[in-house]
Length: 399
Image (cartoon, rainbow, N blue to C red; front, side, top):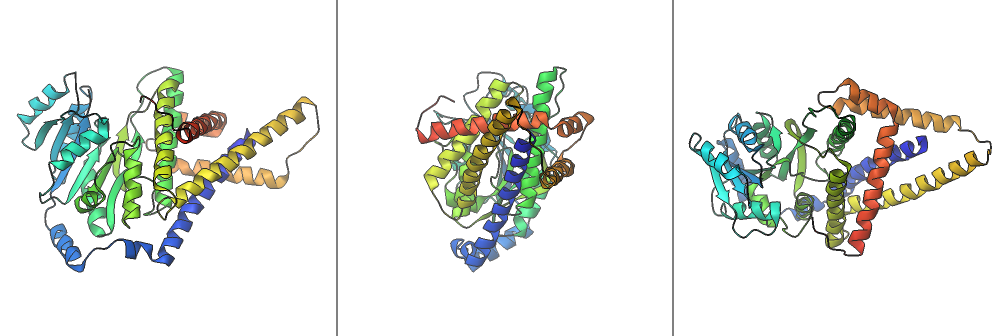
């Protein structure tokens, strides 16, 4: 298990190195400058608009979100930078539509739109709303999930970042988890593992600068001109936010994160729900890379997949070898060098706890004990391998 933990640590460090190598390669090749063809007049026009009060529209796709939609809208109404809100009710059968209509009576910036013949879930719902905005003077669009909570400075901070660089297509929030309120120890453990994982995602976003892997769908502010240029979401993709990020990069746009733009979401609290969520994410990611192929926008992620396969083979081999040696009482010892590397990885894991929002004693116990996160890592590895199989075999699934 220690070796498995070490391998996971090495994988993470190398993935960061791959991301940094991408930055060096792109800066040396000049691809970003040549791919993003923004005329001088267009840049001047953007700069003039950015000095004025921005026109920002928020699109919130909602499918049967009666338990959370009011809280989400109130978060948007409290923004220090005013926004216009469009709630897109997508085939709702609960009270979502009625709740939004009731809020419309008191808040003129809240708008309701109901989808028409949408067969493509979240991506289709958002695209229907985006099409109604074409031709309007809009600076940016905040796309966020209905079950996401954001801080009151989120839009302001996102706009501050987006308006500071005309080559930025989008800026996403850091991604936190809403607190688990129950007392079930198994659900608490699943929640805590994901809480620590989301913090690791944030550390990756910070360390890869403006080359983040994905502008996630929890809460992200998109430049309207960039969003129109790439053609909105791919409605046939399982992970529309990741696929959109790839197209941004292919067009030469940059994407980044703002640490003061904060968002929190609920996470799955059963192994079955977690498996389904991660399988959809990972399968969709592999499908997207297969669709786009090897290019400047995808090569880093493709290399990380090769790295994952290599380290998975190494881990499996080492675990089998250790099992055989223990079962046959073959003497073996761990070298001081290996102990030193493991210790560094352990300390690095403790250091990254600084990215955990609202750190609690239970979080620290899980991180210190190692075993839960090691098992969680193997769970993720199994899901990833199954996602490869589904993608390469082109097996259709009902999500």
